[in-house]
Amino acid sequence: MNLGFLGTGHIASSVIEGIFKSDLKIKKIYVSPRNRVLSKKLSKRFKKITICKTNQQLIDNSNWVFLSITPKVGRKILKTLKFKSNKKIISFISTINSKDLKKYTRNNNVIRVIPLPFIGMKRGPIIICPPNKSLKTFFKNLGKVFEVKNEKLSKAFWSTSSFMAPYYNLLLNTSNWLTSKGIKKTVADNYTRELFSALSEDSINKNKITLTKLVSDSQTPGGTNAFVLRKLKKNKFYQIQKKAMNSIFKKF
Ligand SMILES: NC(=O)c1ccc[n+]([C@@H]2O[C@H](COP(=O)([O-])OP(=O)(O)OC[C@H]3O[C@@H](n4cnc5c(N)ncnc54)[C@H](OP(=O)(O)O)[C@@H]3O)[C@@H](O)[C@H]2O)c1
Image (cartoon, rainbow, N blue to C red; front, side):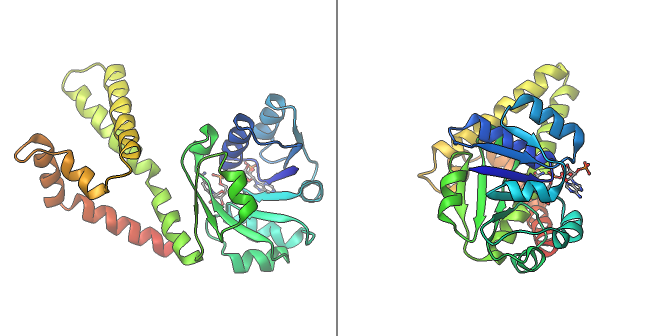
């Protein structure tokens, strides 16, 4: 099978990275000339990658076309391209809905997918909307697939994907605080990364118990975890998080 990536940016590079780490059998990957630096870098690294001269050539050469351009570029260029009816179009574009994608591409074979950069290490959630058997089989090699029937629900998942920077900021804040107490910056950074990584992994390992129970199991009455949790709740930390998710939800 030949794959094509329309837009060779951050997310396309991560997906391609994941594909080459996986057992997926791919004949060729065609990438668009933009971004020039990234596409050249990828084609040097992976022999199966070819940079196309035009976006149309990329589409014509590919069985599956991944739309990895920004919404603004998508609205501008998709109408100008021809997608034959036998092409499968997989859109990573955050804010163009299925109806518009079908209209712009004049093709009904459109599926929206939300990958996240960790796909490059074959990790993390991947939303597929609507459910699609061949895409599920494909993406199962690159992370944990969640199929969503209703496009409105997939917007909720999009909203939570905006928690990457705030999450890392939590790590930064923790590390900075450790540094302020006299701990060396590299030690503080490494300790923080290790702590949060172990917490995330632990929550996956304990997936048989509810998240509510995980919260209660992690604190002893009157203990330090209980103290910090109470303090954050009192200062509306989690309410603010919810508000931010509600606001971003309206944007999708
Ligand atoms: N990043 C994420 O974590 C993530 C996750 C899920 C979904 N997405 C979605 O994926 C899409 C791409 O995001 P991104 O973060 O990968 O953005 P990005 O790094 O800016 O990549 C977009 C790519 O499109 C290229 N491009 C611009 N105009 C083009 C044209 N006319 N023809 C072909 N390519 C063109 C850009 O090249 P130039 O640099 O030359 O302009 C760039 O390489 C967005 O719609 C985003 O919502 C992103």
